[in-house]
Image (cartoon, rainbow over all chains, first blue to last red; front, side, top):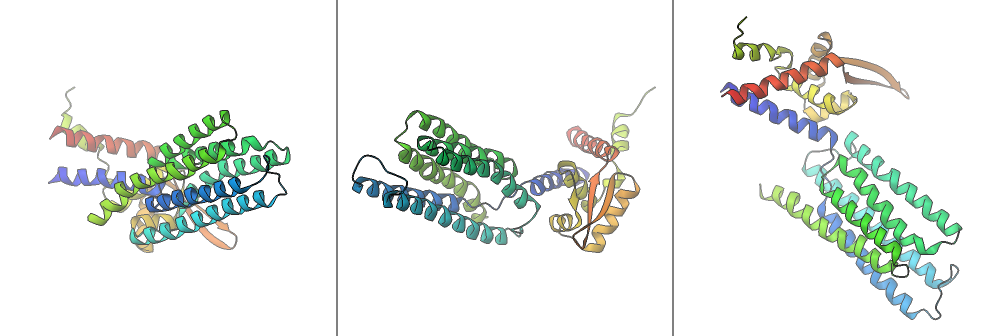
Length: 206
Length: 103
């Protein structure tokens, strides 16, 4: 009898420690969808590039503008999807969407990501276009690794995979789009599915 | 000197932590530098009065300290575990673990 009570105490302690430091309402489905948007975006960008006449894509060309628009579209769509799904999952879990742990998660995600974003703008300014693709992958990957301490551990491996892809990508300039599709598309779909099966489906069955 | 091992363990079971809310407060403060009243309330799923009285009990034992400040114009109460609170809580968990292992 007494022992059971102490076992429950230990379980409570563990649950409180986890819940107060980790935001567990991230949705795996959001990862899968973000991956799909990226793949579609990469496919459309590839079509545009194929139609582009001439070898070089200049900054002023409509081709470049369209590709930037696609990238921004994918980004906005992914963020909106992630927010909406996370919001509904948090509601289901009775966890509030905007609490200390979600704020901490977001802040620690945004520090490396913001640094990477600024770094990319500086690269553009110095016309080092070849490094844009690897730098976005590497910094996004590191942002995931950094944020993983405050959410499910799987995000850590997603981050590591994308960081490694970014490093490999550095050696294959000119294939940035393929690495983007692989990193932001395929990696997100794989890890999103793992998280979806591990957390979302399991909860639904209980 | 002979010490009864089971009795020795039970001495380390700390009465101050013998309640779900107090146990919860300490668990949260062990892994967070500090936590404010609202966060604790949400995580523990309790009422203002209940949380305040349990926090007070831990404060009296010198296991936690209360910091009151203003964020803008809103008063904000936050809690931190003290060094002695951390030590006492670790001893408490060790004692529980030993008790469970004994049986």
